[in-house]
Image (tube, rainbow, N blue to C red; front, side):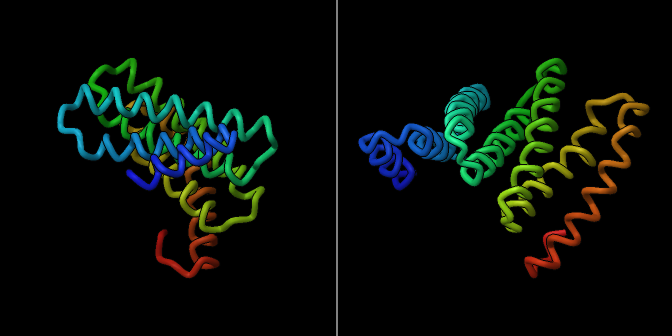
Length: 169
């Protein structure tokens, strides 16, 4: 946490808003891990999500594709945690939609920067959303509509996993 806070302060001093916001979101996420009260945890995650979303927009505006792809992964992780803390079906549905949209985008952006490790992480999180989280939110017919995409990404994760040399898949 302390390192991310220091990095955020240094980026901010140097006028680098996007990396400053991303670092602050990561520092805040450390508080999430330490917090025991679930309502406070959700509030921390909302702060993380806000900062990371702002950072992503700034990276996108600057054309910084690599940091944008990395930040999308952060957003996906924060959304997933919010999803798991949510008890209201409406909020779970909206977080699911966000996870799916951000996950798909993260896969495309990670492929575009050519970083297999980053791509592997994006694929893993997105597949989890498609194969596991979708079943608890969607009607069976809607869930089945995701089968082709899930199969395609499943094949891709195996391929990328082999290139990286890990048994991630």
